[in-house]
Each structure stands twice: as C-alpha cells, then as structure tokens.
Amino acid sequence: MVKEETGTREPEKLTKKDAAKAYYRWYFANEIPHSNERLLAPSLLWALKPSLRKVHKDDDGLKAAYKRTIEFFNTQLTLGGGIITGTLTNMEEKRANEEHAGGPVMMSDDMLNMTKTGLMGALAGVGDAIDSGTIQYIFIAIAIPWALAGSAWGALFPSLGFVLYQLLIGRYFAHAGFTQGREAANILNDDKVQNILSLLSILGMFMMGILAGKYIPLGLNLSFEISNEVFVMQDFLDSFMPGLLPIVVVMAVYYYYVKKGLNANKASLWVAVILGALALVGIL
Amino acid sequence: METLSIWQSLFIAVWIALVEGRAFGGMTLTLRFSPLMTGLVIGLVMGDVGLAMVTATILQLIYLGVNSPGAAMAQEPAIGTTLAIPIVLMGNLSPVQAIIVAIPVSILGAYIYKYRFVVNDKIGKRTDAAIEELDHAEISRTIILYPIIASLILFVPLMFVLLQWVAPLIASLLMGLEGTHAIHVLQVIVNGLIAVGIATRIYVLGKQEYLLFFFLAYVLSIMLQSLNITMISYAILGALLAALYLLASKNGAAVATSGGSDFDDDDDDF
Image (cartoon, rainbow over all chains, first blue to last red):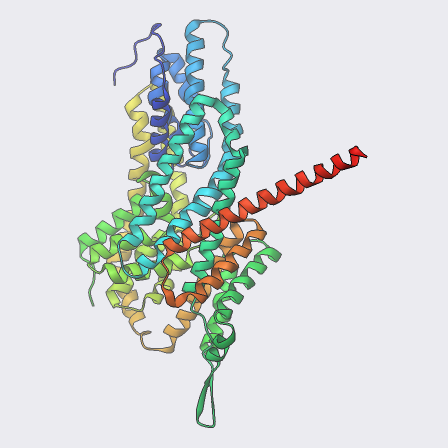
C-alpha cells in the first residue's frame, strides 16, 4: 500500500455524493464487524474512509481522524446511520479545512465526538421502532399470503422492498445530515413527519389485526351427541361470535405484558403449555 | 427418505453463515429475523419451494414478535429455520413439526451469534494496528473480510454437520409423529404461538389508543373472510383509515382551539 504523500496538499471539496457514498458503505458494512468493545464503530470508519482520505491529506491528520472515528459507536441503520454519516462527512471536511488553514481549530475532537454520541442514541430508538418494528412487518404482513401459497414472491417482496426503502430513506437522511449538520435530527419534530410516523404505527396495528383474523385458526374441538344429532361447540360459537377464541388469546397475552412487562419467552411457554394441554384432552 | 447431498448441505451452511455474518449489508436485518428468504433458498436447493415456503410462513408467523426494538433478542430465527425446513422436507412432515426443531436451534444460535462479537473484538486489535500503519487495504480487510471469514468458520462446520448427519435422524424420529394426535396438539400450540407473536408486536408498536385499529382490522378480516381480499387492499384501506383518523383528530383539535378563542373574543366585547 502506497502511503499518502505528506505535505500541505489542499483538502478536496466534499459534496452530497460523498455523503450518500458514506451511507451506502455504512449500509453494507453495518453489522459485519459488530464487536463487544466498539459495537459498530469500525463500520462508521469504513463508511467515512474515502471522504476522510479526500480531506485529510497529511498522515497525522488522517490517522487522528481514523482514531476518533473508531471509538465506540452504535446506532440504527437508516435514520441514525443516515444522519450521522452525512453530518460527520460535513464536519470532518470543516475540520480538515481548519487544520489546513493553520488557524485555531473550532471543530474540535470533543465537538465531533459529542455530536456523534449525542445523536446516536436518540436516533437509534426512534429508527428501530419505525424500521425494524413497523415498516419491516408491514412488508412481511403483505407477503404472508403469497408465502403461504408457496410463491417465491412471499420471500422476495419483503426482503427487496425493505432494502429499497432502507437505501432511499437513508440516502435522504445522509443528504439532510450533510447540508444541515446536526440540525437534521430536528426533522423528527416536524409535524408532517410526526403524522407519517403515527400513520405507520396505526397501519402496523391494522395489519396485525388482519393477520390475527386470518392466520390464528383456533377453535373448540368439542362436540356432543344429543339424541342422534351432533352438536359442534365451535359452530355454535361461530353462529353469534366468529373468531372469538383467537382474539381472547391475543388479548390475554397483551394484558399479561401490560401487567408483568414484555417477556415473550415466558408468554410463549405459558401459551404452549395451556393450549397444548387443552388440545391434548380434546377441548381445542 | 430423501437426504441432502454434501453440496446441498454446504450451500445451505454457507448461506446461513453469510446471513449471520451480516455479509449482505442492511438486508440481513430481515434475512436474520424473518425465515421467509432462508425458506426460499432451502426450497430452491432441495427442489421443493412450495413446502419450504409454507413451512417458512408458519415459522414467520410464530416469529412475528421476536425482534422487539431495544430488547435483547434471545433467538436467531434464521438459524432455527435452516435446520427445521430441511427436516420437514426430508421427512415430508406436517409443516407445524418445524417448530419442534426451530425453537431450540434458534435459541442455541443466539449464543453463537453473540460469540461472533467476541471474535470481532480480537479482529479489532488488527484494525488498530492497521490504523497505526495507515495501511488502508488492511483496515478494510479487518473491518469487512476477516469478520466474514470468522462467521464462516463459526457457522459453516456446525451447520454442515447438523444438516448432513443430524437432520436425517431427527426427520426419521419426527416421521413417527405423523398421523398421531400429536400433530393436532402441535397445530394448536402453533396457533397459540402466532397469537403470542402478534400480541408482542402490537404491544411493541406502542400507543394503546391505536389498539382500536387492531380490533377494527380483526373484525373486518373475520367478516370479510369469504371475499378473499388481498393484503395489499387491506394495507391501502388501513392507510386511508389512519389518514382519516389523523386528519379528523387534527381538525378536531383545531376546532376546539379556535372555538375557545372565539369565546374569549365575545367576552372581551362586552
């Protein structure tokens, strides 16, 4: 590997393209080097590497930039990753220009670090809830009937649809981070954005309701013979309230979470034991 | 009974190692949490996409709650899927039998996945050395290439052995359950676990007031069952209802505030 020439070459100018490129690199590297010590910091370094090399033309400056980038870092892929890669691209360019000019350095290590750590947690919480928690499952819900019919689209649609979404929205955030700096995070306070988020979580609820109605075929297995006529309990139930049993189970688990906190493993165990026993003795 | 050839086992093992090594970038978020794509890959490799996808869908439904934001994940659905679907296909089993294998294996898989972070800590030391040397290519290798290789080493031999030699044994054992009452019991348990998955997801989605939309959708889908309405149509309907609700609550708030100020004005006039 040929080392960079030391000297006083001018930092190159960075554009929105560099910010988008940083995001795409972050998108790919993301969880590959995930470690206990640094979490996703190596991915951030790999994302910013081309931009850092463009602006830090002296070895010491570049090495220092690498070192401050590879400190502990963790955030969510699109919202956190997009805004932070964009913001840091912008800030590192300023830093390099200040270093090159030889005057006082306003864009200090502290400033860069505080921006990074200040944004990463807040954006991760919101980003996870939207992406992994809601949008991913809207795509999956739409594809379930195709998958159940044995179609490849049942797998391709949620995977590719979600990837397309991640790439487009992340690029948008990277551009916003590059042009507006850390102010880009204020986008979350915007009324329109708040409305979109509410709409998505309502839609998420709605799609889960559809899935619950279609794919939990729980019913009573009981039947009696009364004077040579078979009386099927579930038919009787269906005659005035179809779909009663599945919603009772869902809401029982929901209520359990409300009372005891989220513990899906425990809930699964209880449900498996209780329903399993009822099925064993022929009630379900 | 149909078993896997060495190449089939190897291909599937490499696939899951790359997914768990996160080597396909941000796409691995879905690949890891959702069994659907792994189901498709296994179906293609084993030449039975239909049964593989049906089995994957059942696993998908019980895993709807598995990735709860913020909470540590105790299961790796894709790893459980990787063993469960070939077993179902080998024994031509009822798809619900998949959960017998998928759940324990995906819990085991979570431990291996966490071990990856420990290995990556060690690789991180090399990144430091490469930064010190300003060896740009080595920095890239330590961040991308070595962690992927580490994941291949962690997952491929283990998954290969499980697929090649353990899976046929489990399949022949589970074939004994076919036709017994156990299948019905499993079916009921699967339905219960789907209910848990859905309950978890709606709990995680937040705002309790939005639960009304869950109930609305539930009632709609029960009432309209015979019409075979597609999920896309339901999604459009859901989005429109959500937009109407948000619009109405915004206008409601606006009317309430403007009404209040009018009242104040009147007061001032007198």
